[in-house]
Image 1 (cartoon, chains in turn brown, orange):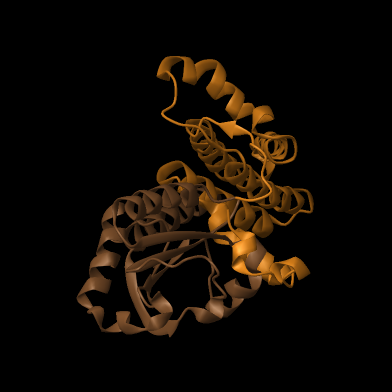
Image 2 (cartoon, each protein chain N blue to C red):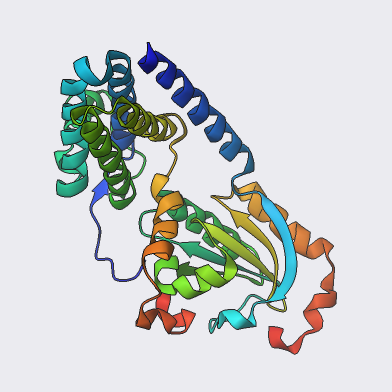
Length: 147
Length: 160
């Protein structure tokens, strides 16, 4: 009888957690604006936006995410996509408080981190992140570091 | 990913099918209890062990999928890297091994809790295609290891 209860509890927990994750995964969350310069990014940032994606080898959704971000950055002018192997940069992972992959930082045109997507974003989440940057206004784009 | 020469590719429906079989087996193990359920738990532990230590190609449920299910489905839309599902097998192996120890050591609590966690993981995998590796791997790495020396290099050196 104990076993039956354990099965019931496990199934309820799994379904609850799974549905919760399905609801929140990949959604855009605004974060306190922080300059990305401490990240030591030496790649060219996008003129209007840059997606910095943290990935790991054991992560299948990271591949899907990379594909979506590649598509969006290829089809949108001034948007760049940088992928970082989290394992190679555990220092950054610690500093930024990244707990799972994929995590995507959304940088505006001046290289300031504006929002974050934890879990695999859908295409519409990615577009919403870009729209959020545009709505925040171009005032951030005056930084010469964006060049 | 850097430092990766064409990793083994698998049909993503295989691990998903395997997770569904695992869910049923683990539920049966729990319902049968630490005594009657023991043989099934041993079989499941070997299945996890084969998938984790030898590779998904040797995972018996994967074999069932390739032999009996895949011929009815046709070719997959795309293949995926073997490492994420293989990591999930390793996590399953740890839970199953702890459950086995509990059963043999006469501790039903350990048996039920460990098997219960394995069932949660298998259900998430089967129903939601949940990526356990994505959740646990980074946390594990952060807990286990300080960043290695070469991780201090600029990001440009670490990306593709």
